Image (spheres, rainbow, N blue to C red):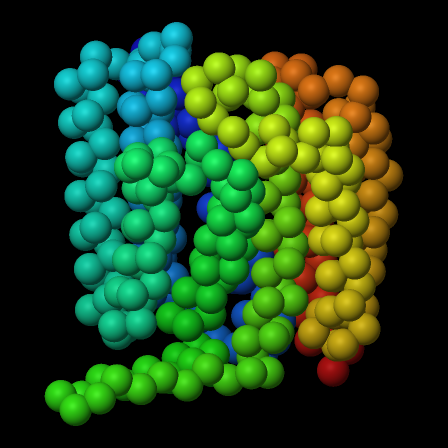
Length: 305
């Protein structure tokens, strides 16, 4: 049991909500929009996504502990072996998904792989610069929903063909715009978790050569923290107005009461142990309500019609 706890701590299992909730949101959104779900493809993608998220976290922790005072939960050899096993598992699920789909998934998966490795490794790690919030928001908030839509609704978002003579691809504008609107909530919420983390760690990050976004924005980083939440709410209202979500989703605005309370507390004090969890709470509050309301909207529509 002690080894299990060490493993869960090493992979930072609590942070995997950033992967799980975008997946759940798309599993709610696709049926609500009249699309079907391929159970096998979705399950394989989910397993591969989680495995790779765990891999990226262990790589980040492995190399971070070489530069700071933190220690790994395991001996370095054991920690490295765990990372290799997780990477192999994620690669296996990735290959399986490509076999079930096509080369587009391979290209998008390869892009995610480069990001995951480049987050903390290489000459210019993403985590050491001022763009980590937006890159993580892009991959968790846009790329993951895009892959889920592509594997479940082939040809709806884009078409890609390969021949000995040429490569060709077509992106359909209307579905792409809808996907971007749907992705606004996961983009903003994911970016905000990293932003809150970097705000709390600003001083210690500078000491180890990390100059993240809060270092450059200063006090404005707190205002950006609030703005990203408000943007998520506005995006939902826009989607309801455009009939992309059921009117039931308007009730998401009720969650702004506890969310605003947590924003105010974070404005007063930025501490990794005391107030950073407020960003996690806001993430769960908004996301859980958002997914529930999308499911509920589809159920009510079926009952009414």
